[in-house]
Image (cartoon, rainbow, N blue to C red):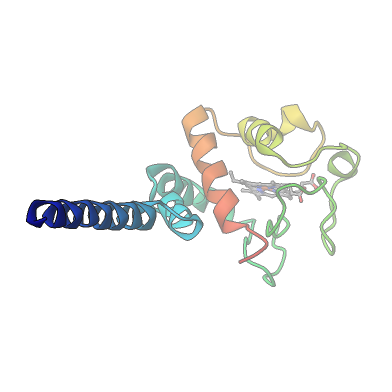
Length: 147
Ligand code: HEC
């Protein structure tokens, strides 16, 4: 009788320990908010932020900021090229029929004049693919529409 009772206790104890392990594992699971924090902590993001200094003279990124020599880039990813309100784009960019996604952005950064001949962005391009990628990682976060 006594041994049965303690066996029951041990079973309960193990079940309890398992339950708390499962609960701890669920807590450790990286949720959506911490994933965003991880991107801004990444070396690519930090490098991209530094590299964007060469674009800053001509481009703002935050909602409500003015166009400069170049258009404000807030929310531009996923949009058709040359369509932001209030900026006087070149006919070349307006007629390019491009949509800004990872592929077109990386090509633009490599050599704007090759992707859209006749565009008016006075920027030669970035030769290093890692640098182009770092700027893309930074732009994805810094131009997010839902900020
Ligand atoms: C000397 C000023 C200047 C610099 C530097 C510059 N840009 Fe631009 N950018 C422009 C202008 C002007 C346009 C519009 C071009 C046109 O209408 O043909 C433009 C257009 C763009 C567009 C297209 C926007 C749209 O809504 O279609 C993107 C994206 C862009 N620039 C990103 C960058 C990035 C990233 C950098 C830095 C690597 C950069 N630019 C550097 C002036 C500049």
